[in-house]
Length: 194
Image (cartoon, rainbow, N blue to C red; front, top):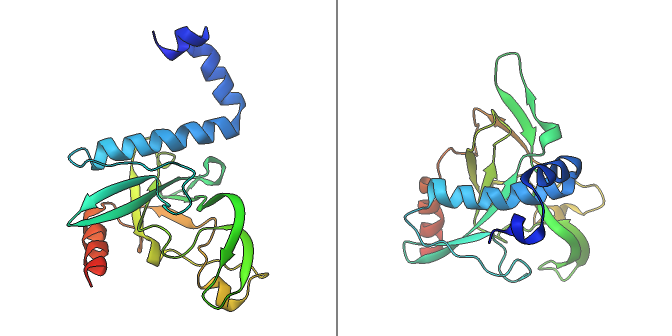
């Protein structure tokens, strides 16, 4: 028995609920993006997933690649931020932060509470760009190449360790984003070897 039948709901009721609830839509799209990413790009690999609440292992999916375990974080465009230009290109923003505030400790011993993700906290970011043209496609970037936070309440020292929470991305892609993960995975694996 399917979940709709077990719950006694119709597809139309679910559609109405998703349309009326932006946060539910965001969660649904997020999990769909993880599934689509695995299917479209990594179907020949055995991706695995750790518990979503495991703060020691940040990443939505993990891939065994060239003798290393590489973490992939998946984020999606913010629908309301997407603009199509007169030239047919797209510009948008994606949310790249933690779901809740938590204490972050820096090498100098200072601590702050933030939703910012850390430089090096995961290896590869896959940005779900479905809203750029209504088709499943992804942009890829190494964690180390993502922009840093510019939040004024953080010190210059702290900002170098904190990722920007809503970076801008375009389609067609511009560096540091790439339309395929393999060259980035090769670079990440090589960096883990040294």
